[in-house]
Image (cartoon, rainbow, N blue to C red):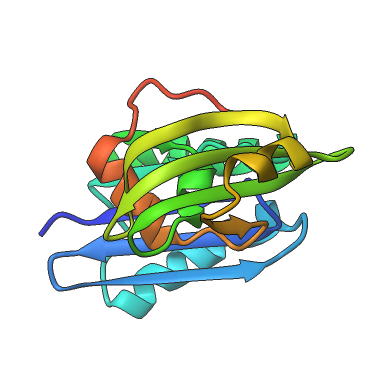
Length: 180
């Protein structure tokens, strides 16, 4: 039974998800800057809640954009687990964790000083099918003009299951972190 773990620490939320043949679990809670202190225990608790041994076959990491320390905490932990478990670590933009449902959607996170990191995606069943506007730092008002009639998900907690599905669908094996 293949097990996939997804994690994201790029935002003020600690986001985790676990999927296996018989089910899926996800958790996302606001932790501010306490990712390093909480990540290991929260990950182990997720496996315990699922009744699974502490090992995954694939790991999906949210690569940001996010805070320098937050993004690196998650990436370091994912790479460490991947090495111990001999599991590939696949990267996907944290912004893909903001999508919900189906349809064209705008997503953004605050990038400070009137700017946002943003993208526009075509989404089917919670998975990005097409990138309409790639992830970029934009002036917030200019980005608003791009999505006037679209659903907009802004500064919300990423969905661990959305990240997991995106990673399995089109995640990158040769990923890079994106910082605010």
